[in-house]
Length: 353
Image (cartoon, rainbow, N blue to C red; front, side):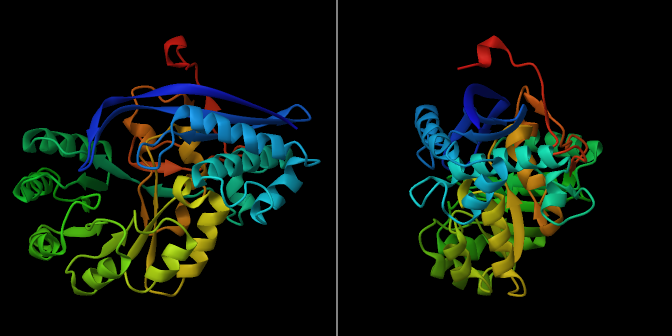
């Protein structure tokens, strides 16, 4: 097997503001694995929150690539990855997820089979995806909500966590007025205290909020679980639900867990989490980082297993260098093509790092 990588710059259509930061762009490192003339691809994106810059990702992906070439073929490498024998415990989940994606893509192409069938789902999953509205003025939020609802989006996710919580309440109120038929999710990214959450959540419940993600600062899962027991709005753990052990501690205590492949380690790690919460009363949400269609495609092949799909990261980009998962009409779709089913578009020279 031959391994290569490429770094590209992903620019957002407009900066996305959340409670802890504002992002206008991020880098992506593409991992390509070639065997017998067929190539599979995966993507890892930089993250300040997870301490991963492009140089670190390149170094770590090169290290797993060195281990990878010791395997005789992609199929045996994928089995080794599932067994924890490739990309060990010290490998960041985002790197393991990119490797998992590239191997799945390659194995699927070699078998002439889309990834969802490799995972036991005969028909390509289709799901309504949430579309994120960042922290912005009420007038801009309302206009965006009207535009997205007109395009077919049935779920909107509103970022929250401003210094004055009344700003958050007003933003949700005008979005509800502008798009009365949509389902609303709220994401403060851990910005609230328990007292603030208990004061605000009944007000958001009156506005028809469907669920709230990670309302409290992460690191105190017992406190989050206790809040979920009293909250009038279902609580979804995100930053407090990184890996399988985190999820096991929260299963049955919160109403949902947001599983992002880049934070749990890839498709097979996500499937283990889904199995662990089955029957517990905690539902699965599939989330993402801002990334290209290549980065989101593995999760799209799992979308039928989730109560909530928040797979809009590619829709926030000024130019998505890959295509194949849809989403512009509010619905993401797994491809029927072999592997992940995504195709590259031309990348500007200015966007190649």
